[in-house]
Each structure stands twice: as C-alpha cells, then as structure tokens.
Image 1 (cartoon, rainbow, N blue to C red):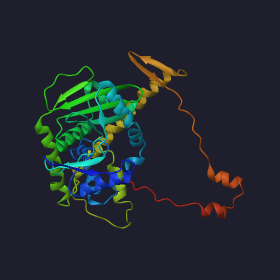
Image 2: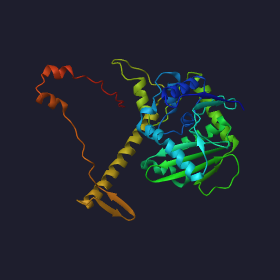
Image 3: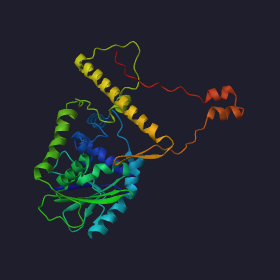
Image 4: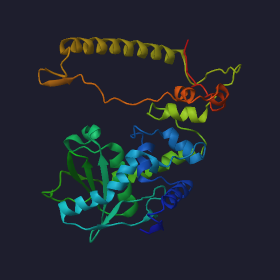
Length: 336
C-alpha cells in the first residue's frame, strides 16, 4: 500500500476545506461523506452531496455551525480523556490521506495512536443525542467513517472515544484482529476486510452511477432535502406549467393517505396531551406509572419592536421606509 499525505495548517481551516474539495474533484469521498453516500446520514442527503460535488450548490463550511465548533474545541480534551483512560498516547497528523488501496476514498483523521497501526476518532454529543449511543451502539454514519479510515490508512484498529457532555464517556474499539476486550473498553467490534472493501465500493458506485453520468440520485426524504430544493430553485416563474413525469397519481393517493394518518395521529396526541394538562392543572410535574411528565414554562425571551423604537425616536416614515426591505415569500407546494 502507498499512503499519500496532503498536509494542511491546522490553524487555517480554509486550507483543510480546500484539500477536501480538491480530493472530491478527483472522485474521492471522505469518511464523513461515506455515510451520506450510503444513505445512513439522516442529516444530509445523497442528493446534496451530489449537488456539492457538481458545484451546483456551495459545500457549507460547517466550521460556523455551533455543534461543529463545540466538537473542534473539545477534540483536544476528548483525546486527553482517551489517553488518561487507556494509557495510550496519540498525536495529530495534520494531513488528508489517500492510498492506492482506496482510489475513491480519502481520510482526515483526528489522531494517530503511537506505537500501533491504529487511529482515534474523537466525538462529542449533547444529552439530547445520548440515545444514539445506547447499548453499545454507534451512529451508522460514524461506523462508515471509521471503516473508511481503516481502509485508506491500512491501520488494523480504530478507537472511537465519545464524550456525551455532562453525562458519560464511552470507548469503542473497531479491529480486524481477534482480541480480548480491555477493561477500559465499553464496546469491542470485530471488523471483516469485506466491510472495509464495501466502503470503496460505495464510493465508486456513487461516482459511477451519479456523478460521472450527470444523473442526480433520487430524493429519499433526508432532513436537508427541502432546504436543498429551495437553494436550487428559489423562485417559481408565474405562468409556467410542466407535465410531471416521475410522480404518478398513485403516488398522490399514497401522499393523501399519509396526510390523513398524520392528522389522525396528531389529533390523538393532542387529546392525550390535553388530558394530561387537565390533571396537572397548576402542578409542574406528574407521574404516570413509571413515567414522568412535566408542564413548565420556558425561560422568558426578549423581543424588540424596532419599528416602535424608531417611531419613539421620532424617525420619519420616510426613514423607516428606506430601511424596510421586501423579503421573497417562501415557495409553498400545494397539491390539489
């Protein structure tokens, strides 16, 4: 195996993003892309990944996203927690890696474990996401990421250390070698070579079936697809009519039935909630069997009426109008 490294400055996020985008143009996917290509990333669709690679929409710089900022800030601490728990030592690589064994993949790893053919992935999660790690589970997109890194680097073992903020720490081992589970390990997973090869196959299939043929993958209901469509088609042109070919009347009948089912479920949920509230009355908490219910006020938030402020400050109606803009109305799909 020939392992290549493209160095970047860890203090310059732009250089890291540029390296990733350049490798995508070489028909390679990173570890965090692979879960999306495999359809197991509920936050990002295959269609968005395709549109980003084709340059139809900008790849967002997630460095401005709060959860990503938290993860970056906490990465050093999570690495230290791993060292303290395991007695192992790790160091940064500061490079994006490729290898001839995985021509459609690249890896940007968090840490290399010293004196081992092993890497470390550092993860943080908030309390709302703790269930994703219950009973030894690891989110499917993280599993794809780890296996991608093992395939690219040739390392036989990958550690994943998760800090669920304010709750607990978890340590996972993914390895090709049959080993005994260490006392400090929460979950040990034995990986087969075929599972690593599957990562290369998924990436190759994504490029060959979609990107190289200029054929976008179908929408599959991922969370970001509605926002993606707004980016691709922000405005509907009045008077234009097209014949819909890929959606049938049978699809619309299924859509109608889903709406009815959702409406029924929402009504039942609301009825149960209202019965609970009726019994709680002025109490903030209650018990139903082994379950607890609460009905509390959220913290008050401030809201400023800036138009009223301007009027009180004796701003003229012309001044107010000069600073008033007309926002484009949202595009709303209506099925009749």
